[in-house]
Length: 167
Image (cartoon, rainbow, N blue to C red; front, top):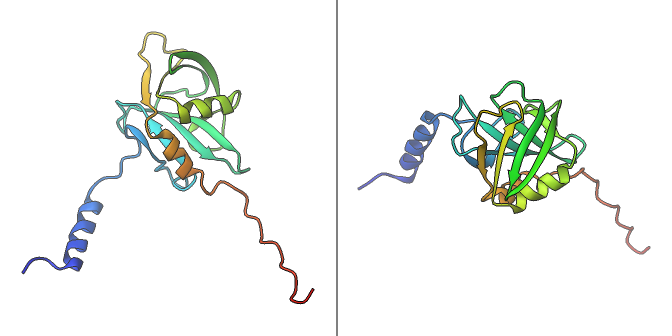
């Protein structure tokens, strides 16, 4: 006879609940941090684990602007970060932020956001880690993830009043 749809759904729900939610995993996905899922996307390095990760977050800020943040287990997070974006070298300063990611790139953020959305890859590391390797973040799927996360990044505007009938 087989399983009924409700039984299949129950089995699937049990399996999904038993699977741990991973906050930092390779690739682009909604941000799993509390309160961030519908306003940010996270792109993590290919070797990311919950214990060791370097990620870029694209986020709808409280003022409805778009912010680019660095999220990593490395301490300190703030300061200069070296990057290679599709074979173009650049450096950015991570500044303090109220967001839960650690640091925000404010200077040239629009340029960085465009490269994240349109590029192929980013290598990045903090300038103090000169002996360490660069973290590699694949940008495949980044534009779609950013677009989904920022879909509702606009101020809510009340509808315009309609003129009364016969006016």
